[in-house]
Length: 210
Image (cartoon, rainbow, N blue to C red; front, side, top):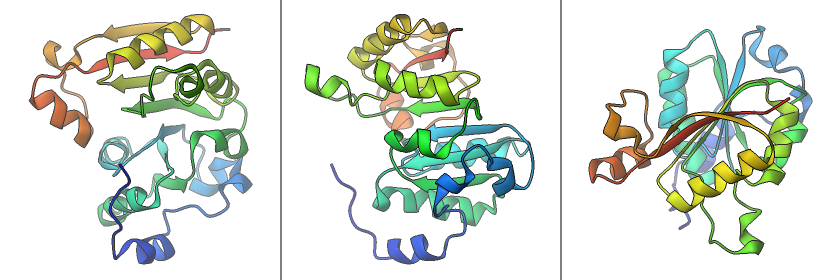
């Protein structure tokens, strides 16, 4: 479902300094953007931005980059981050296919994928899943650290585990019902909604193999 148009969206896009224009110019050089050499973590599909804003606020010694392809969605994250006064967070209006153009080799030290679109279980749609092996190949070129995945879709989770195995990724901290184990970490708005009704949230940590 496409997000409802926000009257203030265009102004937020035009005036918010946290939205990076021409992000490809910082490929391999995000230290120049942030004016420091701290580690860079990223989230693909940041949605309304609560998770990445709270994560960045809790870790001021790390630089964060949030990608979101929907303009009417990313504006909420931009507003949250601006109001929080964060200096270690940047936003990019783009999808995952654009990653090789904006990050250099091993530039990311951690990658978050939270509740991505599971896409129907059809061969032609599977390649659009952010954990399909084609995307894993991309991550392998830019990621020097773990990918943290969360989803409420069991089919997607099983698919993801199989793709990690195909690409020889090291997978650990697998949970089929994260919140049933007393999870106290940061959450997304979507996650809270479904965890509140007892829907199992699945999680794992996967690192590219050698």
